[in-house]
Image: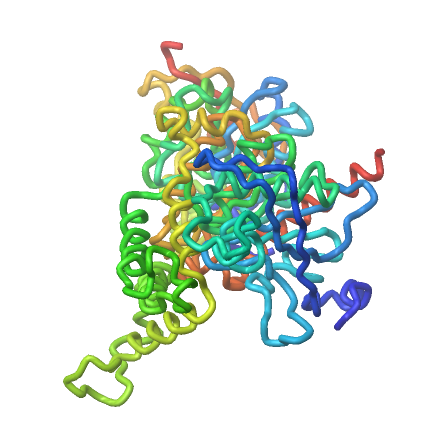
Length: 206
Length: 392
């Protein structure tokens, strides 16, 4: 498989899959934005009998998703979600893709237009190793953010605290939050020790 | 000819080899959309591969405007007459004939062996000519369903087609939802745009205004409207290519320099004339008129106030929809209309937009990513079939 359809981050095991599955109701209609090889949707189909679609920009990801028996639609997420009717999904997932999106605010807004709930996961830029590398004068490079400053697709890096603030300011209601390090939940200083953040949220008025 | 077994062992794609066209005759009257009835009709077809004992591995290929049932392989007496989708269908090819039983059929009203303007009208003993009724995509699909009955195929593993063939696939899904498991709709559209119809009308006018057309009864005068056919094909050909590809291939290249005459001077002129000439030599004008009309008329949403979602409501099969970035005849947006209607109906659908330079014709080329996508989809269908076989 070529490197083309790697997400903006690479993780050997998608430790977030089982946590996401806990947040997906059995039989739910799911839309996975930036579904890559379709592994998450295939996992949700097996574990939660979930159905739905993945959106993927690369043809390598499209082929891998088809091989995974996942419904996949090739298109650029930056074009928005106009193909989907209001409230047509129980849950819209943006898994480790947020940091590479240009029109992020609009995307999150449309996620909650087409879906009742949103699940967003991203690498925590506030992790101590990133802070330490910046203190030493270099842009951070880590397992969760493996790129150099000059070739990174990641343009919207944020910390757990940043995302908390963003959701609150927009009036979104956080239903659940989980921060992981080495696949284990982090409760002590999550913005310092957490590598991966997972949020489940909905519109504040719903 | 290479045996299927050898193919499986070396993993290399081959031709299906020499093939023989067949003809099925149907004597149960076929009611047509135009309210005429064909009392009897014939369909020319070819098959490749073997129908399995469960009769579950049959795939139907629907052809576009000027093609025929000769999809793959070649004829013993015409080794250069290679099927029009030979790069797609064969042992080890994306649609692998060692796993699937592939059926291709010449549509009603065409001129390659099925009942149409050049065949004999049983009522008169003369060629139908202009008297052959105008047939629609729905009529074609109804006739194809008769062929499926005749071959003992109650449900296709897949129906597949490009361009107008994709429209037939859509029509199958709507009209016979329980008779197909998968639909592959490639470089197609849910209906023609005004611009598409405009191009068709200019092509028809070229034929209709040819002095040799004789209201479609040219056979009686022992002639054919070759000039009209030539122009129709030249026009059509422009719409099949991308401007970019035409620029790259021909640019402003001259044959022998400017001569201040109307003889073909630019390479593109002589290319189009050659294509037109070739086409006028083998295609029938009454057929061209009818097939372009069938294209114009196809609009499954029309019966539902233009609501394609409603029109696709009865479809049950899973879909693979493919478009090509440089296709301006049926641009990707047209395929996305189909995808949207399927999503609204919560149907299984995957969609790929292939980055290919060849315009509308891209669906006939062997682009690596395009073929890999189709191959992956058929691999999945084949895996489903063998799973079902194992559990039954």
